Image (cartoon, rainbow, N blue to C red; front, side):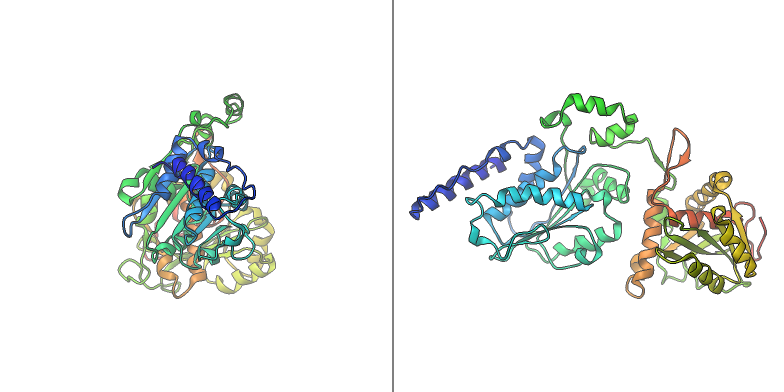
Length: 454
């Protein structure tokens, strides 16, 4: 039975029960147009989430539509229906942003105000966006994704709304929360914008059958609340491929990725396996170089490479979010005194200070060298000549360091260029830029047991 029909029956049955109990007060007319206004695709998604099951069955839904096409409204409707019929459902929605969380709860809260669906005495405490709890034990939590919240508790439904905005480590932390449920459900909804977890989302979409997802999408033509005239006007403001993503819900190919995702994953290795991740040696027994990306607005990042037999091992990543540059310089002076540093030339005074300390520092100009540096890093990924430690393997002993490596790997996956200009698109890239600076000596000479100057 479709969800709209089930909602209609629910209202009628609830009204009959109220009348049978002799309640004569005006109960109001349910806003059924909210449910009937769901289009074909929205109803299919909501119906999949809410349909009865036979035994323990993992349901995985993935929805890719244009911005404003109603994916958030569809899942909010489904969750309201589940709680109206069974208030033991435990549902946690991780939203990609605060605004996204606010929208979803606003849609859901419309149903809470219907006494036919939610009597006043069904709640445990005052309903809020962060927690709407029911006396029967169920709840809905809608929050911007955070590591603390992602790892908290066990739920029946884990819903990742606008998932491309959620960092990979938070996705990995959130999904296992449904493992103990007898009705586990994973719901992924997003526009295919090239954001932090774009590649992860598109991989799940394009290989949905392999991963066990049921795909849902619908055309803008099926969304009467979207004006064709306004869409046509907005299309003039975008390049054709951005319009495909944001206005039509498609997957664009305008902006290509610098580094193949499969190559990044292939070169991310188990740091406990000495065959692929040998113990580091101190200089001068081996060759080291450090890339520094200055953080005048963004974080300051250093990436430490050991180069052995032409393989570059990314031994360390340090992200200094709010440190004073004076503290950063002192840390570099103390920890990298015996290594060669390659730093962005936007920090001319900082480089001069490090040289005054006696450190070996070379200034690198992205304006002239970036194409060369990207080419070297790309070559290394393609030929398996660079290795990064798997953050999941670091998590137990050093979660902070695992998080820094995750940020580097996430940024490598996201790093892309604009084919119209052929230039890298600036954004979430501080860690990658530091790694690119460290490529400078590798561009000209190969290390073969002793250091070479470029």
